[in-house]
Length: 139
Image 1 (cartoon, one colour):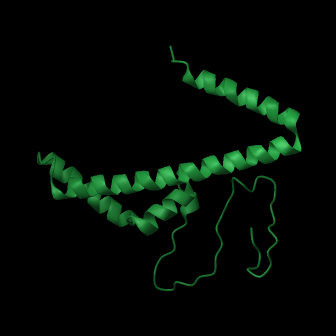
Image 2 (cartoon, one colour; image 1 turned 120 degrees about the horizontal axis):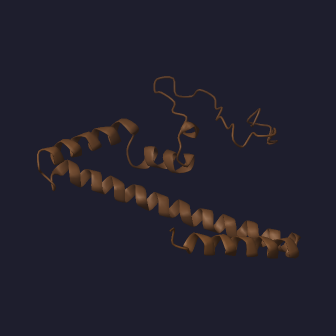
């Protein structure tokens, strides 16, 4: 939580990672402010989708139009094509975010490896086991 914009110190309390609230000065008096941290998805992805692809209302409108077209039996109408375009743009944003997460994970593991090689080796073994368990088919 940044108390003052000119004070770069960040204060973290126990459990604060799960109780995150964005506090920003109100600079847009006429338009609503949307808090992206209250959604189930990744707030960074949500914010980019709304800013770069379509607002929530616009997304809902396009989905509604596509559903109505599909209900009328039109599988290649204009609204369905718009929905496919939006889904493709959102998938691109998710892939970009995934690459960023991968880079951060690599950097964090490299720093951990430098700080404590033995613990890093244990972590690597544990993660490899989790990967093997995830690859096993469920019975």
